[in-house]
Every structure is written in C-alpha cells, then in structure tokens.
Image 1: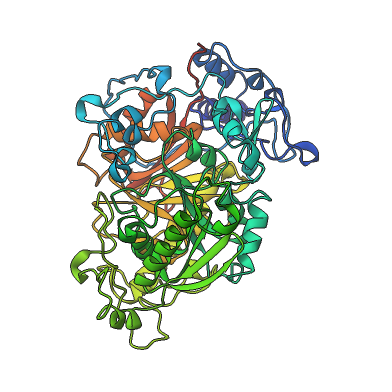
Image 2 (image 1 turned 45 degrees about the vertical axis):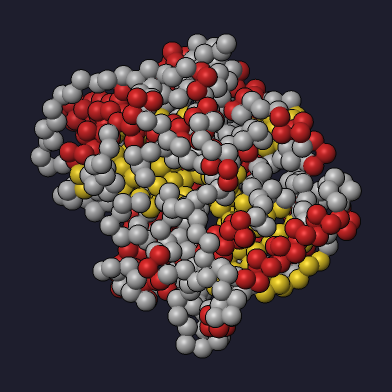
Amino acid sequence: MAKENSSHHLAEAKRKRLTWIFCVSGLCIMSYVLGSWKNNTVPSSSSEVYSRMGCDQTTTTARAQTNPNPSSDNDENLSSSSSSSEPVELDFESHHKIELKITNQTVKYFEPCDMSLSEYTPCEDRERGRRFDRNMMKYRERHCPSKDELLYCLIPPPPHYKIPFKWPQSRDYAWYDNIPHKELSIEKAIQNWIQVEGERFRFPGGGTMFPRGADAYIDDIARLIPLTDGGIRTAIDTGCGVASFGAYLLKRDIVAMSFAPRDTHEAQVQFALERGVPAIIGIMGSRRLPYPARAFDLAHCSRCLIPWFQNDGLYLTEVDRVLRPGGYWILSGPPIHWKKYWKGWERSQEDLKQEQDSIEDAARSLCWKKVTEKGDLSIWQKPINHIECNKLKQVHKSPPICSKSDLPDFAWYKDLESCVTPLPEAKSPDEFAGGALEDWPDRAFAVPPRIIRGTIPDVNAEHFREDNEVWKERIAYYQQILPELSKGRYRNIMDMNAYLGGFAAAMMKYPSWVMNVVPVDAKKQTLGVIYERGFIGTYQDWCEGFSTYPRTYDLIHAGGFFSTYDRCDVTLILLEMDRILRPEGTVVFRDNVETLTKIQSITNGMKWKSRILDHEKGPFNPEKILLAVKSYWTGPST
C-alpha cells in the first residue's frame, strides 16, 4: 500500500510539475475568441476582448510586470464556444535516452527600443530615404541601415496593443490602438477605404476606383475574364492601398501579393497585414520587383499612380517579366475612361489621350493583346509564347528581347532593363512557354514545370513528391504540439527558408496564408517553383531587414536555416524576427541541438519562452525542434 501511495504521489507531482513548466514557459494553449463571438458578432470595444485562458495567475502576473497600465481588455475573460477554462496538459519534455549536456550561458537581456521606433521598418526608413535620389522613386526603395545604425533592442508595441481580430472578422475590422493612424480615414473618407468606429477601424471594402466595393469590382472583372475556373491563382496588386482588392480575391481562391510604398498614405501595408491579407512594403522604382519571372497569373493597378507611359514603358516591361504566359494585366483609373472623368482628374483631354496612347503602344511593343476596355476597366493579355513576338521584333526592335544570359529570375537589387524578358522556347503557337500549369487546386501538388524541365539542380519529380510527404507528416506533428494551428490562431505565417513550398502546401487546409521566403544565397533558387504551385513569396537577404511593419506575422517557421546561414550575426536575425512577430506569436525552429541551444540562449533575453522538442520521428533523430513564444508586453503610455 505504501508503495502504491508513493507511486501515486510521484505521478501527481510529475503531472503538476509539467503543468507548471507548461504555463510558465509561455507554451500554454491560448484560446482566442477574436472571431468566435456569441451570435457571430464583432466586439465593439476592448472590454469585449478575450485575451487568453489556461495560465491563470502566472501569466497575469507576468503581464502586469511588463505592462503596468494594462488596458481593460486584459482583465476580461470571456468564454468561447471552442475554448476551455481548464489548462491543457501536453508533455513538452524531450525523451532523450542520454541527457543533453548544455553549457550554462549568461543570458543577455535586450531592452525595449524608444517608443518612437514602434513602427520601425529598417530598410524603408523615411529619414534615411531622404538621402537618396527622387528620380524613379529611388528614395522610397530599400535602403538598409549601416552597421553603426543597427539596433540591438526590442521594437515596442503600442501601449494598449491588443491581439488582432481573428479571420475572417479581421478582413473587416482592426483595433485602432494597434495602428493609431486616422489619416486614411480622413483623406479617403468618400472612397470607403477605412472608417473609424470607436476603438475599431472598419474596412468597408471600398477603393478609389471601386466605390461600390471591391467585391462588386471583382465581379465586373469576372464578367470580362475567367476568375473562377482555377486558371488564375496568383495575382500582384501594385499600389494596393489597404489591400481590399486582395482581401476579396481570397474568397475566389486567388491569392494576391499586394504591395505599396511606405509614403504619405500612412501604414497602408500595415493595415493590410493587420487584416490578415498578404502584403509587403514595395515600390516600382528603379529596380526589379523581388519575384521570379513568370510568377503571376494576373497583375492589377487601380489608380496606383505608377507612370506606366514613362521611360519607354519600362514599368510595363517589368510587369511583363513577372507575368506568366497568358497572364492578364488590368488597369483602372487614369487614363482609362478619360472622356468621362477628365474634369474630375483636373487634366486636359489631350494629356489623358496621349497617356493612354502611350500605354497602348508600350503594351503592343511587349506583344500583348488588348482583351477589352469596358467602363473603367482595360485588360491586356500576355502571349502564351514568343513565337510571333520574335518575328515582330525583327521589324519593331524597341524594346529588344533581353539576352538569354540575363537571368530573368534574379531580382534582388537588380536594376530594371529596357528589354523584353524572353520566354522559354515553344515548338508550336499553341504551346505554353515553360510548360502549362494545372488549374487550382490541382496546381498545388502537380509537379511544377520548372522541375519537369530540370531547371532546379538535383530536384526531380520523385524528390518533389517525397518532399510533400515529409511535410504532410511534419504538419501532422505540428498539429499535436500547436493545437491552435487548425483553429485560425495563426493567420499570417512566414516560412523563412521555403525551399519547394512544401510547408505552405501542407498548410492549405488551415485558415492561413504563407509568405514563402527564399534566401537570395540559397544553393537552389526555388521561388519560381513555389509560384508555379500557386503560392506566393519573395526573395530576401536575412542579413537585412524584411520589408514589412512590426508585429505583422503570427507564426514564423525556420527550418534548417540557422545552421547554414552564417554570413551575419544570429542575434540580429533573431531581433528582426522579434520585430515582425506579433506579441504571443510563435516561432518553430528546426535544426541540430547545438544550433537550437545557441538560439535559445539569445531568445531567453528577448522575452521569449521556449522548449526543445523531439523530432516527429522520435528522440534518436539528430534534428530537434525549438518551439518559442514571444511574450506579451507593450511600450509605456506617454
């Protein structure tokens, strides 16, 4: 009997110990109702916000220490139909047969940056941008800090920061305290971009050229070109505003890479990402866009203020590079339909006619076909191959076809060129250059044409299918260690080392989207494959800042990244990850134990809580997983 009691007490003590570790490590199961409101309503004030459950007094104390003046939303504990008030117990212990010998390291604690840096974007800093030429918008392009300008501090959230609304409510609502800018609600008031309603922003879905809303505008486009048959999957929206066009394309299974510069229209891209809509800071200036050739099925400009007619159509030439064979370019706004709007645009009829004629000429020089012009919309289509275009260029040589050695996929700090990017050779007029794509959703798992054609070294169809199976198993494991994965807790996700896009493909069943990042110095440049699968992404040098605002991603995945990316300071990369990660956001690291313990020693000083877990195949696999959660804290009230 004594032995049984002893065993019972030992088991009970172990259970309590694991539950305590589970909570204080920050890896509690966080149950949100920012989207599961009773009667399907949206909260109208911060007092209606449910913060989290399951950590009881430990988490409350931690939050009080980091935020001495918490907003009232942190004091409320409203229940959700999908959440439980009891802490969920998971065993986060690594079941190693041999205990890991980890040398104790002194933790360096990072202090918060000044509150003036709350919306700091390192490579799009406006003060630094003023040093550069205004010609071709060079001053708004990426200009990253020098070594003596680098920050070794934590970017602070606003004083009353709240966990964003849950998708799909986030498409229409955001908290004012998270992005305290009313400029767009005033400047674009009559255009229905954004409205202020008490403590919330509301996004009616309007735009400068779609006063009836983005949904109706997209329906107008769908009457002119096929949007619902799966042939159009990836889109690029230049000068996106708050990305309402991209937000409403999602319901049609079309994912848009929306981009806008950091300019006088304050925080456009920040609003887009707060809504749970893919977006990135960017501009059409003097350099290529950071995407491979033949990436997008559709390109869109709705009064995006890009001078398409200037520099001999140089910007249209760049759109042609990133547009896939047979892809569409849609233009609405000046100069389209100028006969109706010329007085309101405060420009002469002659000026607007000349601009449209110049655009038409530039499109013809790219061998594009005018599909239609109806109402406020003009649509062109890129040819499916260059058989006829090559013949045309023998007569009309401007702009010429680029050299085949030009590396059309290379697009990192690469200057624009006044030449047409050549398409892969086709044998007949009805053949899609580079290979035809399957319709969505079959495209996600069909072997991409770039792999079929052997353009990725040492990657064939069998390797592609094996990679998909690996990620299917990994995501099943992630579901066990991150149960909220399937419940919409993580909307904006980044894969820092995306390879073939297998992570994004395995995540398709969840209410999320993935920004697939391919490092510019990766041994295999695979971003073109990712786009052929129907996903979006960008190139990135991780020794520099990412082109996004602080607090714009819920989950970051870093698989096999840090053990190979040794060109720059690991600490700076982790601080950049902290900048773009939302409070209570999660990071999944996959790497060897030595690398993970080094990372953990740094993140411990960044107010992150973490645990090293076994590989999905068990404790004997040398690769491990570090699961980390960024603590909730805010900057001080001024």
